[in-house]
Length: 416
Length: 85
Image 1 (cartoon, rainbow over the protein chains, first blue to last red):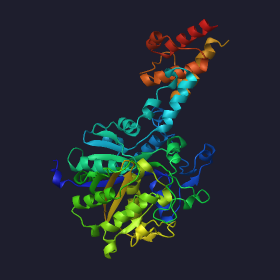
Image 2 (tube, each protein chain N blue to C red; image 1 turned 90 degrees about the horizontal axis):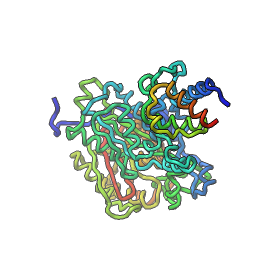
Image 3 (tube, one colour; image 1 turned 90 degrees about the vertical axis):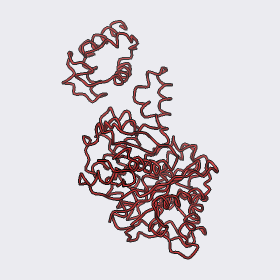
Image 4 (cartoon, chains in turn brown, yellow; image 1 turned 180 degrees about the vertical axis):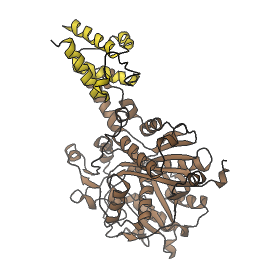
């Protein structure tokens, strides 16, 4: 029997992660605990004329387990996405046969580019002199929906399947929308997450804006969310996946429940393509609390969007100060800024944020941010974790914002 | 000039590598779609890899579409080889 919408709860039963912090949950959790940075100086970017050669890097990923048919249709970041989905399904104790042909099971990933394939196909056309020389895989790697079109086919899903593009809020919105599809009764189980390519091709014009940190002599210190010395973000990438299920569906099959997606809100700034208003993320956070029937004091950890940009961090800090009444003398929650370690994972960031938050809470800690030497004035009173600290949060607010002034806030309740 | 047998061996070698097939399965009577599990997209890649290998054009689309088995493919390629000789 299907529960009425008002009684449906959305729980997390699986997590998967491929990032600059590691290729599996255990390694990533360890990196978070130890404060191990995934950022390096990439010489090729400097040779190509980048203003900043800094980037998150992923080493040692092995896609040989994936059949050629899927490898040729998935760009590198799509293969990361598949690996993250495999991890999440394994943790959720689900096999492909549990998902195949099920109209109640769907897939939403956040992604907003697939640039390497676009460049490659043009080169191949020039070399071959005719389009048929390009081969069959490029079109399926080129589409923004490359992750979902490939994985939904591989898993033989019969439910919802699409990619959500909302710049750096894509991954957070993918989780939020997947949760809404379950809570509204349209789906019982959703695989969701975000993916982000790491490539000079996808980053050159962004670098041209001068938005990336130039602290090239000390890559691990370059991403400095909320610090007065921050000089820009560090581009990064990877893939993160979650398995969400309607609670009764998960309970009935005996699944281990890791967390609950308690509420989700999204807003737009309607302000500027690249400069956040701050008001928009503040509204998203307040709306998420209201929708969950929660007070600000119910949140004990915030995964800040905090990308290490001058304007963005200050605006988010002000919104946090206001929402949690820190300027009224309240303590407010602990604030984590994990992009200090990972750099900014763009389309994936809102999804990896949730995975990092849950890996930390499962380990009973919050990652510190040792690059925070002197907090920006806008952060006054905010309790930003500088050193890794023992902490067991009960409710985590996860923020994601992106170009176009899009904002997403998720409230995740940790299963005790 | 490459002998017919050398051509057959080369076809098996490059298609086995391209499509991760077992050469032992690529017998003349093996059908590309059913026995070797290739699909219409693989056929696009097959043309690309064969043209690169043998440096001749597989532009007869009607004849390409009529290929069902490995042997059909061998005969088609041997004809092309002889024409280009």
